[in-house]
Length: 124
Image (cartoon, rainbow, N blue to C red; front, side):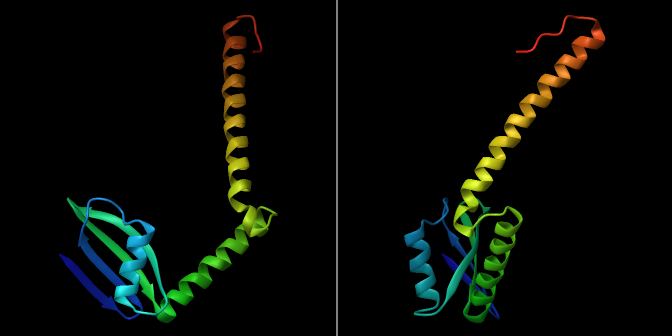
């Protein structure tokens, strides 16, 4: 069963499906809803047992959505001082660094606790 609700440039589709649609299935659905037109899938989530809700933007709404994504991408790239293409690798490096900082913080907390208990301090 497929239910489609259209509100201006927004299309909400509910269908019977356990798993998220793969890219080929999403493309087929977008083409069926708007043949030859611009559409962008913005959400795919479970809404009940065996039911999924897909939210799409079409036409001018899709173009505005893509433009907003591009502006956010450019702002992130500027903040991280890298090009848009390098964003995934840059974020991965930052997360790795945060993990290392967390480990050092935990080690420091342990040393401080040892110090206050009067135990000999040992660095690992």
